[in-house]
Image 1 (tube, rainbow, N blue to C red):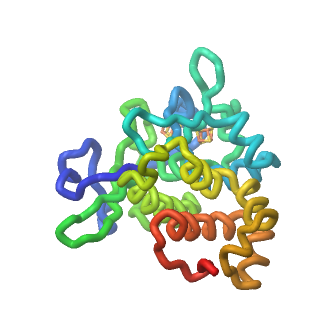
Image 2 (image 1 turned 135 degrees about the vertical axis):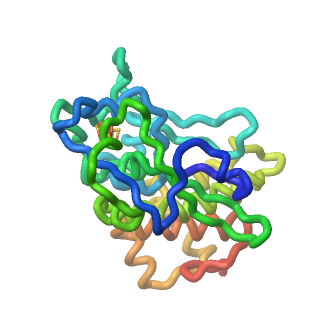
Image 3 (image 1 turned 45 degrees about the vertical axis):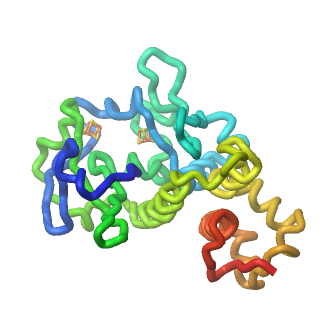
Length: 260
Ligand code: SF4
Ligand code: SF4
């Protein structure tokens, strides 16, 4: 999810959509462009995408990250981006694409779910708060935009079962905004705290080991009910990890964890 300055919103490409607006779109196996959008992509994966995909594929977080992602730290950035690694073929197809369509469809990433609607988190300095902004941005080759089915944003999110994804991605986007202020100091984005932050966000299996098999629970008080939830649920562990990152890096108070 892109970070945007609210003053730039009206100058960005694509048609801005507000909650009361409607757009036309329908994708189905009968369109001539079927599957064309699942190739040659820079497909960013957010932490909840990784949880859903690694569980879908029956892989540990380590194995998923090894096999399926490229972790890219761009020059001047303070935290890496995680991209799905495309297949090593001429068309750079998505590794989950088959002739019948997406083989991980119920657990496809947030970006695929929203497509062709893109979201951004726009910071409104005057009001000191973030606002979600939406754009309708189908590429020219996408014929779904010429179909007749009409949607509003709420209906589209429901149809794509994107609510959980969107909520988790917004939580993460807020942390990413804070990370852009460079919390690492001299240690830099390859230091120990950055690695631990990456683990909590993208490698939940290792983070669980860290919570339960290190001195973590001696250093932080975590209620028994929360401990039980994060032991069995990757999603709860990820939410807990987000809260821990905020506490660990910026001392922000969290309801589920406090320093002892
Ligand atoms: S390009 Fe558009 S219409 Fe074609 S398969 Fe992709 S989303 Fe569907
Ligand atoms: S995950 Fe599925 S929907 Fe997304 S690009 Fe790959 S094949 Fe297409």
